[in-house]
Length: 127
Image 1 (cartoon, rainbow, N blue to C red):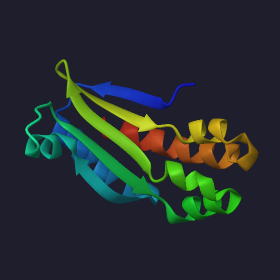
Image 2: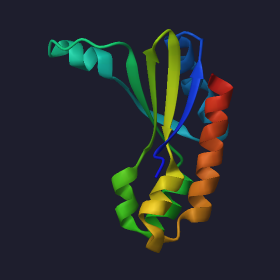
Image 3: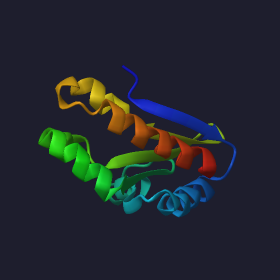
Image 4: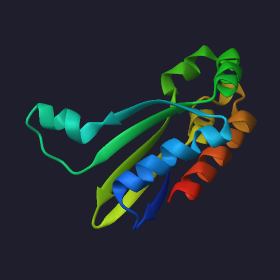
């Protein structure tokens, strides 16, 4: 089971993060939080390269998914992980369709596919 969709770019890390934050609302999603993992780990004495987790949500889609099965909350909100590696900036999306695969009884296939298509579009616009 593939859990992530991945895109790479030569654009600078912060430019990609900023583009994701700017492009997300254009598709009726909202940025809920941006976690600076590099800074958080540095506070505890651990060093690593740039890594941010961007949590996003669309309330309408979240409501629809939760009405089908409340356990989907375990996979919410949707997330982009952005990190720098080998001179590239990498963006990964936790695939909403993976949730439908893990929870076939919930009947999330169509909803998850639509959400995933939109999130992939945000990614393409941002890299």
